[in-house]
Amino acid sequence: MALIEVRNLVKKFDDKDVLKGINLELHEGQSKVVMGASGCGKSTLLRCLNLLIQPTSGEIIFKGEDITRSGVDIRKVREDIGFVFQHFALYRHLTVEDNVTLGLRKLKKMKTKEAVEKALYELERVDMVDHRDKYPAQLSGGQKQRVAIVRALAMDPAVLFLDEPTSALDPKMSREVVTVINKLFLDNITMLCVTHDPFLAKYISDSIVFMDEGIVVAEDIAERLFYDHEDPRIREFFMSVIDHR
Ligand SMILES: Nc1ncnc2c1ncn2[C@@H]1O[C@H](COP(=O)(O)OP(=O)(O)O)[C@@H](O)[C@H]1O
Ligand SMILES: [Mg+2]
Image (cartoon, rainbow, N blue to C red; front, side, top):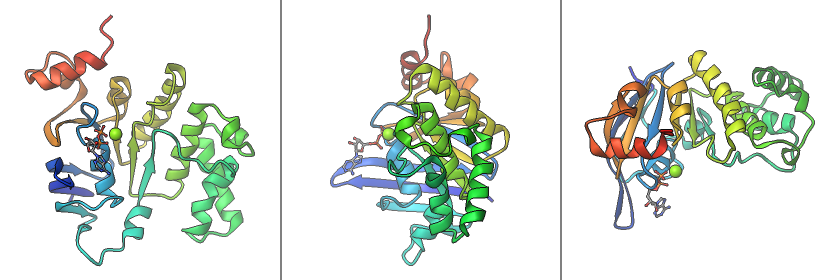
Protein backbone atom coordinates (compact mmCIF):
# COMPACT_ATOMS: atom_id res chain seq x y z
CA MET A 1 0.00 0.00 0.00
CA ALA A 2 1.25 3.48 -0.85
CA LEU A 3 1.94 5.91 2.00
CA ILE A 4 0.25 8.63 -0.07
CA GLU A 5 -2.11 7.97 -2.93
CA VAL A 6 -3.60 10.94 -4.75
CA ARG A 7 -6.65 10.25 -6.88
CA ASN A 8 -7.99 12.74 -9.37
CA LEU A 9 -7.09 15.74 -7.24
CA VAL A 10 -8.62 19.02 -8.40
CA LYS A 11 -8.00 22.50 -7.00
CA LYS A 12 -9.76 25.61 -8.25
CA PHE A 13 -9.12 29.14 -7.02
CA ASP A 14 -12.31 31.04 -7.86
CA ASP A 15 -12.74 30.10 -11.52
CA LYS A 16 -9.12 29.20 -12.15
CA ASP A 17 -8.38 25.47 -12.49
CA VAL A 18 -4.93 25.02 -10.98
CA LEU A 19 -4.85 21.24 -10.40
CA LYS A 20 -6.88 19.40 -13.03
CA GLY A 21 -6.93 15.82 -11.81
CA ILE A 22 -3.62 14.76 -10.31
CA ASN A 23 -2.86 11.08 -9.76
CA LEU A 24 0.24 10.24 -7.79
CA GLU A 25 1.61 7.56 -5.50
CA LEU A 26 4.39 7.75 -2.97
CA HIS A 27 5.54 4.63 -1.14
CA GLU A 28 7.36 4.42 2.14
CA GLY A 29 11.11 4.84 1.60
CA GLN A 30 10.55 6.35 -1.82
CA SER A 31 11.67 9.79 -2.92
CA LYS A 32 10.01 11.64 -5.77
CA VAL A 33 10.71 15.02 -7.27
CA VAL A 34 8.06 17.21 -8.89
CA MET A 35 9.19 19.45 -11.74
CA GLY A 36 7.44 21.73 -14.21
CA ALA A 37 7.23 25.33 -15.33
CA SER A 38 6.60 28.12 -12.87
CA GLY A 39 2.87 28.41 -12.13
CA CYS A 40 1.94 24.86 -13.17
CA GLY A 41 0.64 24.04 -9.68
CA LYS A 42 3.54 22.34 -7.87
CA SER A 43 3.30 24.32 -4.63
CA THR A 44 -0.48 24.08 -4.72
CA LEU A 45 -0.16 20.29 -4.94
CA LEU A 46 2.12 20.07 -1.87
CA ARG A 47 -0.12 22.44 0.06
CA CYS A 48 -3.21 20.39 -0.78
CA LEU A 49 -1.49 17.18 0.30
CA ASN A 50 -0.80 18.45 3.81
CA LEU A 51 -4.17 20.24 3.98
CA LEU A 52 -2.72 23.76 4.17
CA ILE A 53 -5.35 24.39 1.51
CA GLN A 54 -8.56 22.51 0.91
CA PRO A 55 -8.74 20.56 -2.38
CA THR A 56 -11.82 21.19 -4.52
CA SER A 57 -12.34 17.49 -5.24
CA GLY A 58 -10.54 14.17 -5.42
CA GLU A 59 -9.02 11.93 -2.78
CA ILE A 60 -5.80 11.95 -0.80
CA ILE A 61 -5.24 8.61 0.85
CA PHE A 62 -2.61 9.05 3.56
CA LYS A 63 -1.73 5.94 5.59
CA GLY A 64 -4.87 4.27 4.30
CA GLU A 65 -7.25 7.08 5.26
CA ASP A 66 -8.87 9.63 2.95
CA ILE A 67 -7.77 12.88 4.59
CA THR A 68 -9.99 15.07 2.40
CA ARG A 69 -13.04 13.84 4.27
CA SER A 70 -14.62 15.85 7.05
CA GLY A 71 -13.75 14.93 10.60
CA VAL A 72 -10.10 14.26 9.84
CA ASP A 73 -7.65 15.55 12.46
CA ILE A 74 -5.78 18.06 10.28
CA ARG A 75 -3.27 18.85 13.01
CA LYS A 76 -2.28 15.21 13.29
CA VAL A 77 -1.83 14.93 9.52
CA ARG A 78 0.37 18.05 9.45
CA GLU A 79 2.47 16.74 12.31
CA ASP A 80 3.14 13.64 10.23
CA ILE A 81 4.29 15.64 7.19
CA GLY A 82 7.53 17.60 7.57
CA PHE A 83 7.65 20.71 5.39
CA VAL A 84 10.73 22.59 4.19
CA PHE A 85 10.26 25.89 2.36
CA GLN A 86 12.35 27.88 -0.09
CA HIS A 87 12.91 30.66 2.45
CA PHE A 88 13.68 28.46 5.48
CA ALA A 89 10.95 29.92 7.75
CA LEU A 90 13.09 29.64 10.88
CA TYR A 91 12.05 31.55 14.00
CA ARG A 92 14.32 34.59 14.02
CA HIS A 93 14.19 35.12 17.77
CA LEU A 94 15.19 31.51 18.56
CA THR A 95 18.61 29.87 18.46
CA VAL A 96 19.32 26.94 16.17
CA GLU A 97 18.82 24.51 19.05
CA ASP A 98 15.55 26.14 20.14
CA ASN A 99 14.25 26.16 16.56
CA VAL A 100 14.68 22.39 16.52
CA THR A 101 13.42 21.66 20.05
CA LEU A 102 10.33 23.89 19.90
CA GLY A 103 8.11 21.40 18.05
CA LEU A 104 9.45 18.51 20.11
CA ARG A 105 8.51 20.25 23.35
CA LYS A 106 5.23 21.85 22.28
CA LEU A 107 3.79 19.22 19.94
CA LYS A 108 5.52 16.00 20.96
CA LYS A 109 5.43 17.05 24.64
CA MET A 110 9.04 15.99 25.20
CA LYS A 111 10.89 17.06 28.34
CA THR A 112 13.53 19.70 27.61
CA LYS A 113 16.46 17.34 28.23
CA GLU A 114 15.09 14.70 25.88
CA ALA A 115 14.25 17.33 23.23
CA VAL A 116 17.76 18.78 23.37
CA GLU A 117 19.32 15.32 23.04
CA LYS A 118 17.17 14.61 20.00
CA ALA A 119 17.97 18.02 18.50
CA LEU A 120 21.71 17.52 18.93
CA TYR A 121 21.54 14.06 17.39
CA GLU A 122 19.70 15.46 14.35
CA LEU A 123 21.98 18.53 14.08
CA GLU A 124 24.96 16.19 14.05
CA ARG A 125 23.54 14.53 10.91
CA VAL A 126 23.88 17.79 9.00
CA ASP A 127 27.08 18.95 10.69
CA MET A 128 25.42 21.87 12.51
CA VAL A 129 26.01 21.02 16.18
CA ASP A 130 28.72 23.67 16.53
CA HIS A 131 26.19 26.33 15.51
CA ARG A 132 23.55 25.34 18.07
CA ASP A 133 23.66 28.63 20.00
CA LYS A 134 23.54 30.92 16.98
CA TYR A 135 20.51 32.82 15.72
CA PRO A 136 19.33 32.46 12.10
CA ALA A 137 20.73 35.90 11.19
CA GLN A 138 24.22 34.59 12.01
CA LEU A 139 23.96 31.69 9.55
CA SER A 140 24.52 31.42 5.81
CA GLY A 141 21.56 30.48 3.60
CA GLY A 142 22.82 26.92 3.27
CA GLN A 143 23.19 26.57 7.04
CA LYS A 144 19.68 27.96 7.58
CA GLN A 145 18.25 25.43 5.17
CA ARG A 146 20.12 22.59 6.89
CA VAL A 147 18.56 23.68 10.19
CA ALA A 148 15.11 23.87 8.59
CA ILE A 149 15.52 20.33 7.27
CA VAL A 150 16.64 19.05 10.67
CA ARG A 151 13.78 20.83 12.41
CA ALA A 152 11.33 18.98 10.16
CA LEU A 153 13.10 15.62 10.48
CA ALA A 154 13.37 15.80 14.26
CA MET A 155 9.59 15.35 14.45
CA ASP A 156 9.98 11.92 12.81
CA PRO A 157 7.40 12.64 10.14
CA ALA A 158 6.13 9.87 7.86
CA VAL A 159 7.19 11.97 4.88
CA LEU A 160 9.22 15.09 4.20
CA PHE A 161 7.94 17.68 1.71
CA LEU A 162 10.43 20.19 0.28
CA ASP A 163 9.32 23.13 -1.87
CA GLU A 164 12.27 24.46 -3.89
CA PRO A 165 14.75 23.98 -1.04
CA THR A 166 17.72 25.31 -3.03
CA SER A 167 16.07 28.11 -5.04
CA ALA A 168 17.09 30.89 -2.66
CA LEU A 169 20.73 29.77 -2.47
CA ASP A 170 23.85 30.56 -4.45
CA PRO A 171 25.54 27.61 -6.22
CA LYS A 172 27.96 26.78 -3.41
CA MET A 173 25.31 26.80 -0.68
CA SER A 174 22.97 24.96 -2.98
CA ARG A 175 25.49 22.12 -3.37
CA GLU A 176 25.81 21.96 0.41
CA VAL A 177 22.05 21.45 0.73
CA VAL A 178 21.93 18.94 -2.16
CA THR A 179 24.56 16.90 -0.30
CA VAL A 180 22.43 16.87 2.84
CA ILE A 181 19.23 15.89 1.02
CA ASN A 182 21.14 13.24 -0.92
CA LYS A 183 22.19 11.75 2.42
CA LEU A 184 18.52 11.57 3.44
CA PHE A 185 17.75 9.93 0.10
CA LEU A 186 20.43 7.29 0.71
CA ASP A 187 18.92 6.76 4.20
CA ASN A 188 15.57 6.02 2.48
CA ILE A 189 13.75 8.97 4.02
CA THR A 190 10.37 9.25 2.28
CA MET A 191 10.37 12.55 0.37
CA LEU A 192 8.37 14.59 -2.09
CA CYS A 193 10.40 17.54 -3.37
CA VAL A 194 9.53 20.32 -5.79
CA THR A 195 12.50 21.81 -7.59
CA HIS A 196 13.71 23.49 -10.78
CA ASP A 197 17.22 22.27 -10.16
CA PRO A 198 18.03 19.23 -12.33
CA PHE A 199 21.16 18.55 -10.28
CA LEU A 200 19.15 18.28 -7.06
CA ALA A 201 16.41 16.30 -8.83
CA LYS A 202 18.82 13.73 -10.14
CA TYR A 203 20.62 13.10 -6.87
CA ILE A 204 17.63 12.80 -4.57
CA SER A 205 14.95 10.98 -6.54
CA ASP A 206 13.79 7.51 -7.41
CA SER A 207 11.62 9.14 -10.06
CA ILE A 208 10.60 12.55 -11.33
CA VAL A 209 7.01 13.63 -11.85
CA PHE A 210 6.66 16.23 -14.60
CA MET A 211 3.67 18.58 -14.38
CA ASP A 212 2.28 20.94 -16.95
CA GLU A 213 -0.71 23.24 -16.38
CA GLY A 214 -2.14 21.26 -13.50
CA ILE A 215 -1.71 17.73 -14.81
CA VAL A 216 1.00 15.09 -14.53
CA VAL A 217 2.27 14.52 -18.05
CA ALA A 218 5.07 12.06 -17.30
CA GLU A 219 6.86 10.20 -14.55
CA ASP A 220 10.27 8.70 -15.16
CA ILE A 221 13.87 8.57 -13.99
CA ALA A 222 16.05 11.64 -14.60
CA GLU A 223 18.10 10.08 -17.41
CA ARG A 224 15.01 9.46 -19.51
CA LEU A 225 13.33 12.84 -18.88
CA PHE A 226 16.21 15.29 -19.14
CA TYR A 227 17.52 14.84 -22.66
CA ASP A 228 15.68 14.87 -25.96
CA HIS A 229 12.32 13.72 -24.62
CA GLU A 230 9.60 13.00 -27.20
CA ASP A 231 7.11 15.35 -25.49
CA PRO A 232 7.92 18.93 -26.59
CA ARG A 233 6.74 20.41 -23.25
CA ILE A 234 9.26 18.29 -21.39
CA ARG A 235 12.00 18.92 -23.95
CA GLU A 236 11.53 22.68 -23.77
CA PHE A 237 11.47 22.74 -19.99
CA PHE A 238 14.74 20.84 -19.63
CA MET A 239 16.36 22.83 -22.44
CA SER A 240 15.72 25.90 -20.30
CA VAL A 241 16.87 24.56 -16.92
CA ILE A 242 19.85 22.39 -17.85
CA ASP A 243 23.11 24.18 -18.47
CA HIS A 244 24.09 23.01 -21.95
CA ARG A 245 27.47 24.66 -22.17
N1 LIG B 1 -4.18 31.28 -2.97
C1 LIG B 1 -4.29 31.43 -4.30
N2 LIG B 1 -5.30 32.13 -4.85
C2 LIG B 1 -5.41 32.27 -6.18
N3 LIG B 1 -4.57 31.73 -7.08
C3 LIG B 1 -3.54 31.01 -6.59
C4 LIG B 1 -3.33 30.83 -5.19
N4 LIG B 1 -2.22 30.07 -5.02
C5 LIG B 1 -1.75 29.81 -6.25
N5 LIG B 1 -2.54 30.36 -7.20
C6 LIG B 1 -2.33 30.27 -8.66
O1 LIG B 1 -2.22 28.90 -9.00
C7 LIG B 1 -1.24 28.73 -10.03
C8 LIG B 1 -0.21 27.72 -9.58
O2 LIG B 1 0.55 28.26 -8.52
P1 LIG B 1 1.67 27.43 -7.77
O3 LIG B 1 1.10 26.16 -7.27
O4 LIG B 1 2.30 28.34 -6.79
O5 LIG B 1 2.68 27.11 -8.97
P2 LIG B 1 4.18 26.58 -8.93
O6 LIG B 1 4.52 26.21 -7.53
O7 LIG B 1 4.19 25.41 -9.87
O8 LIG B 1 5.03 27.69 -9.47
C9 LIG B 1 -0.67 30.11 -10.34
O9 LIG B 1 -1.32 30.62 -11.46
C10 LIG B 1 -1.03 30.90 -9.11
O10 LIG B 1 -1.19 32.25 -9.42
MG1 LIG C 1 5.98 26.95 -6.23
